[in-house]
Image (cartoon, rainbow, N blue to C red; front, side):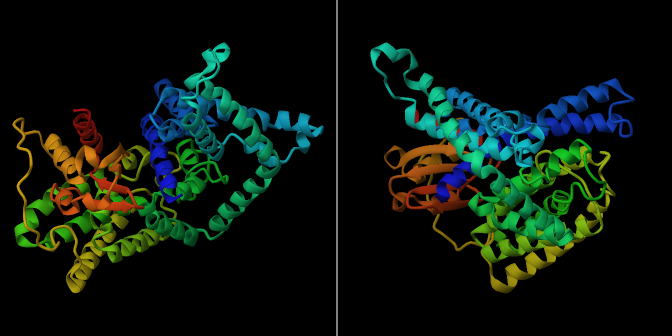
Length: 483
């Protein structure tokens, strides 16, 4: 079950990766016309409306339905993505206010308010899951000759529509209870105000290793429980100093705190390993500061020094609490890095965003001092401080001197090659693999390639955290498998 949720989290990254496009369009539009929101500048209006087409209304839900169906399908096929859209359309049309009023025989005004909010990301995610299940089950089914045209992948949308009808019937009865529960949970956190933002920040980071933070994020960032913090912030549909409170506190952490932690780990690395540690830590720190992609840096110490990671989660909660307490707000379309900070700083709902930079400088000092003290005091095995291991000669010398190719070959060989690797996939920062025998995997050899970390998942699963270059490493490994 845990593996499935991790795959779901990975698949969510595909539609989420579309959000920066909306952020850039709307950010530039508001930058051009911060007062009129497009009323005073036709170019600004054009850009803002283009961005809204991605984050407003059911658009994001459709992205989730299509992206998750595609990501969870066993061979990433387009017919699965189409089926995700089919599932979404079937469920949302059957459970629309107009349809429910007909089914219940009542006036539209008497329909439960929950059905006014059926076109949300929760339904999008559910639709994607339904479609992926149907694709994985029916995409290779052969029907009798008379029905042969509908065999295989053509059968998937039909079965998806059928399955969606069943789900729609169930949701007809239970959706009002689900929606009420989600709203009450959201209201519970909202009612805690700054403390709620702090608790959210803490659990957001704490769930990163499991990949389940996406589920938590959906409650606060998207329109599942009525909060919809990201879309409301970028569309200026909220309260200044309040909307964005579930995003703002991440900026000091990702732009300043984690890079400072990387500096502390570099300064405490063993002298002979400092150069190797620097190449890893500098790259991951830059990614955190510039784009807000933090997984490569977090995974570099998450399993080597888990106590440090808990400290990091606590500090994230504190940062969220402080930003919310003083009503400092900024937002992001993808993550809390410099790009999103610049784009969002002049949005109508941005409130004293530059105070987040001041907070970030203080956070950087705290991270550096605390991380350096804890690493030295408890001899934590952060990058560059691992136990000495005997170096082995690489199995291949790459005549083309291609570092990505060399890394891919070395990792694949350390995994046991074709005889041991049964499946290969990747998300934004990690290689996700299934192997026949975990004992045959040489984890130390993989670590010597310079990857930030390794995570064993279940009896046969292993993840190699590579960083933002993971797609290229995965592509090279797939080439090796074809030979």
